[in-house]
Image (tube, rainbow, N blue to C red; front, side):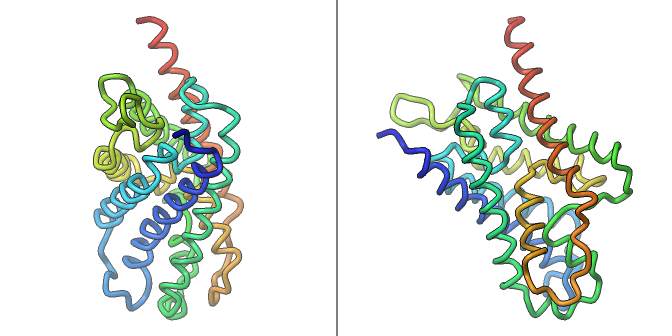
Length: 255
């Protein structure tokens, strides 16, 4: 039975919610005052983010393909693997899931947010920020990181690489089409290799949804939302996703 677009978007929202709850949650666990996980470090964060993506994929994969990322949706559409008419609803669902995930992290760690004085650490729980603020370089880093994510998804979703099946037909194309564990490893390696400059948003919904939650929640002494930087983890991943699709298409036409 064909899954309706509405149901697909519901699962995109739920999968994105779980992704952000666990992903932003590990940042809170490692950085907020009096957390038992304080000082866990970058390796803990990258591993947990990869596993968080895996959990989101396991939920949404069978129903929506588990894009969980506007850059993935746009990149797949540009490559001809996803209908353009579904892109906007998917993106809305992903951002809503990200927002709700950010709200849940605040509720879960409220006492620790109250105990934390550093405003930048509180913001870092929800969204990314550059280690060195250089908008042009930060943008390039987000483009390259997302290019790697989407190009691997495109090639892994090709016939012969796709493990996920619905009967005799390939499953919906997305993160879910390359398998939950491989996509977790992909996100981990991007974080460990390319995450040191910008925090590897590589996902507009991952950054914008929780950033909106930071703006909306009554966080004690929360400080700025850093809207001045917020365009980078939106524009960069979208460019990276489309660039990956263009490269994929060019190479495929040459074969």
